[in-house]
Length: 360
Image 1 (spheres, rainbow, N blue to C red):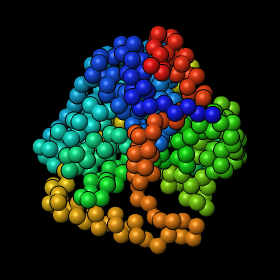
Image 2 (cartoon, rainbow, N blue to C red; image 1 turned 90 degrees about the vertical axis):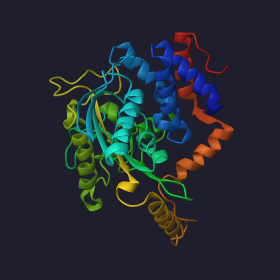
Image 3 (cartoon, rainbow, N blue to C red; image 1 turned 120 degrees about the vertical axis):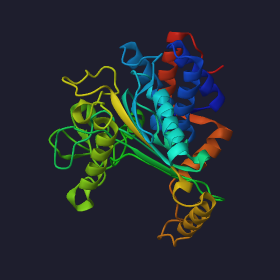
């Protein structure tokens, strides 16, 4: 079962929780906006369902509610940001804004971040560039739950990549994807529904294919895109590795199997080579390459042609990246956000702790 809750109610509740954790009002606004953008866009695995997880990380002092976020190294087009263990939901927009400001000045901006944690959906941060006629790029490393191709050891995170590209009359092209067959949050959704995972999502601790949505709790692993040799799983592994290196090796964060786990009850890895999780952001000014209006006209042409591609049997039309999320956002803004019963219960427990009502 699920309960439909208005965006306004969820916003007020989530903002109050972040404030109760000690966040400033401005940081609570940012964190709430980023977190709920996932629910609005239909990415339920990364929205309010994760709120209690942030609270638990704060409980064990792995989140600093009042961080001193700062640039520790920079050139005209690049920077390294130290997040001071702040909420990734706050650190990431700060860093993306640094990339945008550098792009305004020199054409492109590239920012690597260390000493941070889970930043919500990658797409939110990439999309910040759109209003400036820029292409936005966002990625992050994550808890080591993914086995590299032909391994049984968990070495990488789901390590998403997002790219947002502006258009003219057409909506923006927004690709936002994990480098695994499915994100861990999708497994959590199946767990709440007591459903099995499709083949190709996970393997057990011996490396055998599994449909057990709880397999990660039994030392199993998520699989890279492709899942096997015949379907090119080395490609997902390679993409995840690139994200790990750009986000954490480049910034001085902890990478690979040393990436800090999101669940607060999981012990921190020993001998961590860096500080916290890492992110990587890019902003590219369109007119650094060609006139922005000209580019956007051609993006309109590109999008229109792909939308009009002949659909395969059983399909009505061809989508472009960002279409499903836009449909969800329009519907949920108007009708509210469906929240499954286990998440509602979880939120109510968080609210009880801080004396905050979920439904006002």
